[in-house]
Image 1 (cartoon, rainbow, N blue to C red):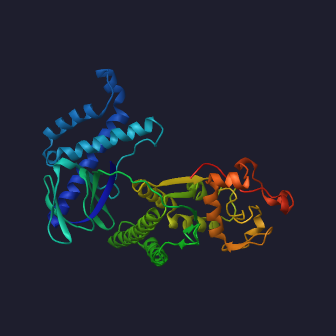
Image 2 (cartoon, rainbow, N blue to C red):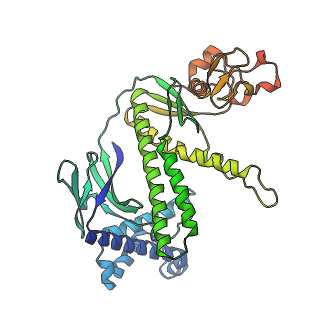
Image 3 (tube, one colour):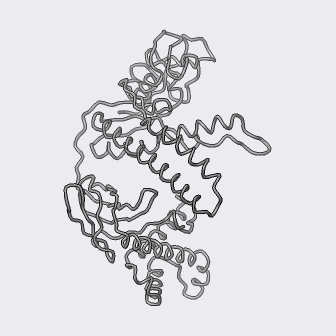
Length: 414
């Protein structure tokens, strides 16, 4: 059994869109009121009742609130209960140290509401269109871009810069077959988003750079608009649409690349990168200002534009669906190690694309060489055949003559 989310673009009428905004606004209000209760009134509630706020007690409060205000009762109770479930889950994650303290939901950012799967109904309208029946809203058409599989557990209707969308959370019966495909190592970079140990290189679409240039121009125009004006609001929406379009193109490429890789390989080895630390700002503090801040900022944008973590997340579940595995190894010295002789020397990396071993003269594309090292680093046979030392003993070639360079690290099994 696997869980999958299928997202479709809705095509609501003007009346339905007004209902969407009403539903989102009421659910946002219920969430914020419940958050205020837990944040400001929990001591008084505890002293009067001897209990703490939880999902059940706030559902009883919601029932009384709906009886008092008709405009709240006009929105289906399930959506409001789902908002309370979200808050209860947020507090649970906070108390377990998995997230920060819950914050209020805001208009324009948290425009969403959710139904339970048993309340909705989907039917085919034509070859390219389907419709979903939502309680108290009616039938809403959506573009049927892919078949809906499995049992629908819940449906979330949300608004972004490109319009209203419906996300179906489905539970699908699935048995992963035995995967006998070969393993592969992947090096993630900026010039080449993905470099495979087979020699293949993949990069995000070039259209992302063109849209990014248009987005920068739009943002400069936005900075000249007067705050509170209608022109500034229109320009802000234009910037949001460009950003959303970039995200959709990147995500589409990630899905296609991950699908091709998961179909061709049974075990994928990646570097265990801490992307959050890699993209941290270099500005420093007032007492100790950073160096080359603008250059580091540009590098951070380039790294984030590649979508390394998003690709890793998508690849993980696509491999799991096909019986494959995603493994991660230490990234130390993978770009400085010769995949032919195992010598570690920083000067072997002549440029971004060229790798020339200073010990044996081996030449290769630098990313391809690193991908081979990443694959071997998780192969047990590498440790047996070449006697590679553990990560703690790997040193650079600056500390001793070239013939005595240590081999790259190996560990784990594939």
